Every structure is written in C-alpha cells, then in structure tokens.
Image (cartoon, rainbow, N blue to C red; front, side, top):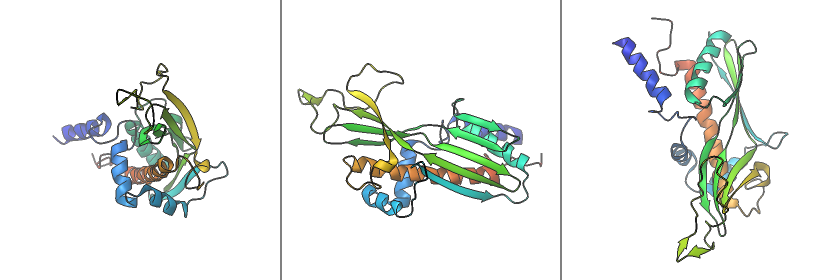
Length: 243
C-alpha cells in the first residue's frame, strides 16, 4: 500500500495535478501569489520593489540565494535537485546544462502570459524565460535566477482605439499557436527590463511593465521556495533512505 501511495504521489507531481506543468506555477496561480505578497496596485508594488533591486552588469534582473543543507553531500543534493528539475520542467529543451561532476544544473523555461494588458492602440501579452542556475556543494546550494527581457506578443488590433468591425475587435485576443505567423495583427517584440518602468519613469508601457516586474519578482520567490523545499523535504516528502 505504501509503495502504491508513493507511485501515485509521484504521478501527481509529474503529471500536473499540482501546478508543475512545465513550470513552477501557472500564470493564474502566480498572479494570486503576487497579489498576496505585494498587493493589487501594480504601479505602487513595482515602484516599491525597485527601491531594493539593483540590475546586474548586463542590465538583467538577477536574484541569488544560498540555501544551506547541513549534513547533505553534494551527491545527495544533486540527486534531489535533478529529480525536482526533471519533474518540474517537462520540456526536454529546458535543461541546458546538467553536469553532475561540476555540480551545476541550468534550466531555461518560459512561463507564458504573465501579463495581458490592453493599451490605447495595442494589446500586449507578456511572457518571460528565466535562466535558473543551481550550483551544488556539500551542505549547500546556490540558486541564481536571471531575466533580461520581457517577451512581448503585441496585437495592433486589440487596443481601446484599434479598428473595429461592426463594433467588434478584428482580432484582439493576443493569442496564436506556436510558430503561427499568419495573423498580420500580431507581432513579437523584446523589451529590455532596464529600459522600462520602474527603471524608466516615462514609459509608454508603464502599466504593462509594472505588473510584469512584480510577476517576474514573484516568480523568483516561488523558484527559491520550491528549490529549498526540494532539498530539505524532497519532491513528495518521503524520499529518504529508510525503505
């Protein structure tokens, strides 16, 4: 019975019953998490966060945390983190480096549509692709989380003053299938974080970027929390040597 329970628990974690489908959490869960921590006034929240944020030398948003794991060897920590990474990020291309000897795992995985905002002329859907680096030593790991750009899908027919067809937007859903370039209303952009609000006060995309910053920051916290949980308690809570 205990073995069956363990298998079911692993299937739950890997199969997406908990929010681990290709990312640590879905955009809707991330927004709820961000609101609980920083409030629902995105402009104010972004401005407050910016007081304590320093962009790195590449003008990227980078967070780093060392998590202590007393008594655990480099090998034990590597196994725990490797298990967590494989179970969490389903895209095989997400793991860009997995070096057991060096004690380093690097993951780059997109979380889509963390912001959807209708502006005057355009509608924007914002996604991010953080680079997550896990460096492992005996008794501790270091987590580095970096985002340089917001990935933007802009819809020129989705704004408040965009053309309409009999009172209806001609498109305006800011959605498309992967690699679909057939909709002329949709186009891709990359916005450098350092060139937008709150790091630049006069920003025409101020409201979009305020929420994007808060959501990006919240996701970094979620990553740190999940990594710490994985090395201290395991993915499902019973990965120990007593079996």
